[in-house]
Each structure stands twice: as structure tokens, then as C-alpha cells.
Length: 546
Image (cartoon, rainbow, N blue to C red; front, side):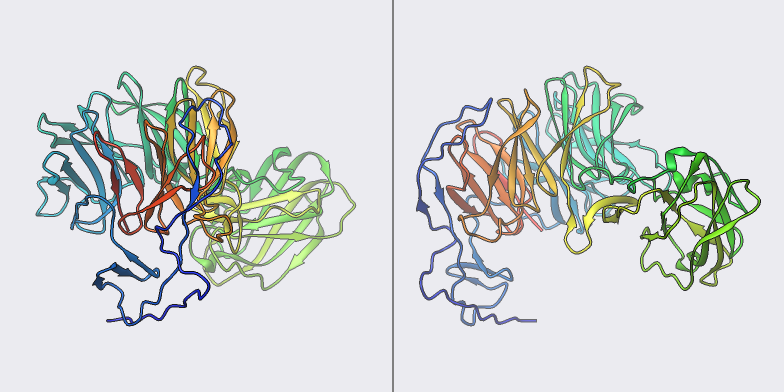
């Protein structure tokens, strides 16, 4: 299919994507960072009249993209025809790049940087140079050990560990499993080695935790709960910094009494895993299942409370099992019940959906019972959550993400972004949290600072690692009044003080200078949808694509 695009022209001014205006010097100072102060400029983008040029066509101005751009990538490039590059890492000696691949029949490509050719392909495809069981890959990595002798590739359920041969190719694939947590598989994301190479710290995206893995045996030796959907991770001294794409955990319903529930009983359940006590664990990935289309659950409180609000959360599957008609009842002896609130014809339009109900009640009861008198015709009944509250204040809106309630606007996505800080010198302490922009993804640490690419708010947070506070936020909009910032999704800092930020929505790499600059001084074209940057000496290679 061919597409002909007509584009509007700004009649007042047309400036190419790589045009530049110069402004005043940046005066912002980031604690702990010393980089050369330079003139700060802004790059601006404007569509041109494309006439009858067609999407995909290569013209004198570059290839035409569906995103209203001509693009002629800056620098050298290597096309890998065996999948989309999801992430990549440079070997410690700077001779090779290991790139994880998706949707092309391979899982991993090893690139020789001297010859600038693909040296080895790894996957379950018959054409692979080295066969492994599956082509699923994580969002981050693969990761080399400090001495370059191992390479770890994140996959569903854990990692595949390779040994690295003297010529840079990999061999001896070994599966390193991270157990599932109920229905939540271990979606392995970023991995960081300890300085001595003995421990691999893994961000387990699907389970909202970081684990410490023995690099030799594959055994999990420590686990820390972090924020929602951990993605990127860097180590600075004895601290791990972890970006949480989904931000902080959702807050309980205001006035929730679940911590005062002393006993849970039910008309029936499905032991050992689908039991009634799961309704109060704040985990939508667990559930209560009764082997009848109707049933009841009772909470006994440590002391009487006047409940005025409750919520129900649908379970993971089979909408026919959802409650349709139900009554909330109260009692002070567990035998004589008073109806407090009744609903019929209720529908849960999605899985893990939470619906709240308020009602008038001034009597404190010791027992509360949810009595379900009809579902949607399935022979079984199920719920993943039932909360009760003595407050009518509304709960914060959330959305389900892989069985986790994430604070979110139903129309705009996540409403929080955080970085968890794990103190390895005090491994039993709970991780602390730093608020950053929305949808934090890639991270880079250098000179006492951690740079965090916030994809949804189009900026980069700079964390002073001495204070564990955000000391600067750098906008990635190419000019001051731009309404978009082109989705920053990777960041690195060069030795001469240039901050490089890949802009996935602009197919470009922003180059920022200053101490640190608050706007890009240059924008360099890249391949389509760049995802991260690597800096092997002596030349920069930036990775595409999607």
C-alpha cells in the first residue's frame, strides 16, 4: 500500500528539524556535577510541504516517515534484519555490542565493533548460530559481567547466562530461573553486577521487586520490594537506584479497615491458593473462588466500626464469575444480620477493575458480610479484592498493570513516577523512594548524579546521590513553547560534559551542553525510534529502533 501525505506549511517560518537558535548561557547548577559551561541553544521542528512524497520513499532529503519527517541518520549505522533491537550493551573491553532482539526470529545479536558486522545470532530459529529455548527478551540488557566473561540476557521467568569466548561470541547458555509469584511471572528487566562480579541485581518488572542473584549458582539471596514495574537500574557506591515506570504503590482506600480484620470466613473456597483471606491482601493478582454461583464472605473486626464505604475488585478471568447481585450486611454477633447496602445488575467491564460503593450507616458492627446472590451464569464465583472503610473519601483512581493496581488517570495513564533507592550496606532496610517525572525508564550514573529519562513528562530528572534528591529537571522539548518533548527514553553523559538523550518520538538524539543545559543545544537524527545510546571508545554508536 502507498500513502500520499499532504502536510501543512507554517507560512511565517519554516525551520528544519536540525536548525538551531542560540539563547543565553544556562546558569543552572547541579550539585556534584562539573561539566563545561557552553552556549545553550534550542532546536526546533517544523513539517514541510512533502508534496507527493510517499511514506517509506527515500528522497534527496532522506527517507519519508509516517511521523511527518524526512530522516537521514547521523553517523554510521548497521542494519540488523533479524528483529527489532530492544536494548544493547557494550562489552567491558569495548570490542563488541550485545543487542537483544524481538519479533524477528532471533533473541540476541553479537556485533563486532572492529569489523562493524554481526558476528553471531542467538535464538530458537534454525538459522541461529547458537540455539536457545525461546526468543522472548526483557526490556533492558543484555548485561556483561565486569570482567566480560559472562553475558546475562533477561527473559520471561529469569535470565539466560552465557559464557563469553575470547573472540567475543557467546556459548554455554544456562537458564537462571526466578520463580513466579502467584500469577505474576518474573519479567526480567535491568541487571547490574556487583563490582566483584559475584552478585547480579535484577529488576523483576512483573513482580515489583529487585532480587540479588548469586552469579555462580543462580540462587536468589535477597529480595526488596520496590515501586510498580521496575525498569532501569544503576549502582552508585553502596546504593542501587531503580526506576519504577508505574510509580509508587497505590494507596489503600481512605479509612480502610483491612488491617483490623481479625478473621475471614466464607461459604466456600478453593484451597490452597484461591481462598477468602486473599480478599484483604491488597494484591489483585490473588483471588477468592467459591465452587458455587452464589456465596458469602465475612470479615470480623478487632473492634466494632461503622463502615460507610466498600469496594470490590474483579478477578483475573471469566467475567461470568463476577458478582451481579449482592448485599452488604452488618452484625454484632455473627448470627443476626442487618442489610446495609444492596445492588443488582452490577457489571465489571474489565479484569482487576475496582468499583466503590458508599452508603449511610451510623452503627458500629463487629462483623460485615458480603452476600452474593447472583453472578453472570458461571457455575463458580470469584473476586480478587473486598475493602471496607469508615470514610466516604474517594479512593485514588488506579489501573491494572499485570495484576497490580497502579495510580493512574483512566484517560492518561500513570500519575506517579518514582526511583527506589536500595542501601546495599543495610540490606534489611526498606528501600526509600524519590519522586521523579512520569514513566521513568532509562538511567545513567556519573559524577555523583543519576540521570533519569522520564518518557511521559518529556524531561530528565537529575538526582544528587549525596542527598538522594532531585536537584534539576531538564526539559527535552526542542524549543521553549513546544507542546511535546518527543519521549526521552535513554540518557548518557560524555566525558566532555555533553548529555545525550534519545528522543524516541523524534527519531533523534538530543545533545545538551551547559551546567547542565535546560534545553537541547543540538538534535542529531537517528534511526527510527531510538531506544538507548552506548559509548564504546572511540566513537558513539546509538541504537535504534522500533
